[in-house]
Image (cartoon, rainbow, N blue to C red; front, side, top):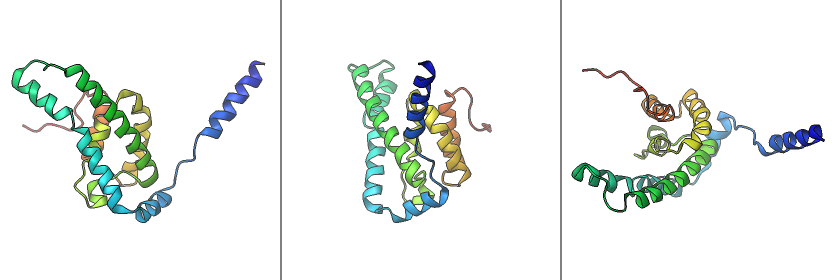
Length: 161
């Protein structure tokens, strides 16, 4: 019974995993995408990334104390962060990472992964390695996201004084 249950679960897991796309498939999908709606979606994700974060950060810097409603606003921001992260993972898997030099748009999509919840880190890490090896993400953006994934313990670069 245990063996048959194990085999059933194993088959389900194998069937549920999608094969990783090749670099050629990713580049082809990127070339074929309708760019304007794609840019608009990425811009909106970037705006949403700062929706509550920016005002909360500003209020905290002024008062040096958590403003009223802090917890509920951060809860809303975390929902946005999760939604943005899930969508950016989908985009990156299908089209490659939307690095500004690659897409010719000044969109800081790296911030979305930089603000991602820990529950996504195991998915983001290997995805970023693939994107870095393919040259679809800049080294600084890659380092900043890796710093976040490493729980911000050490700076990803050497500070020059």
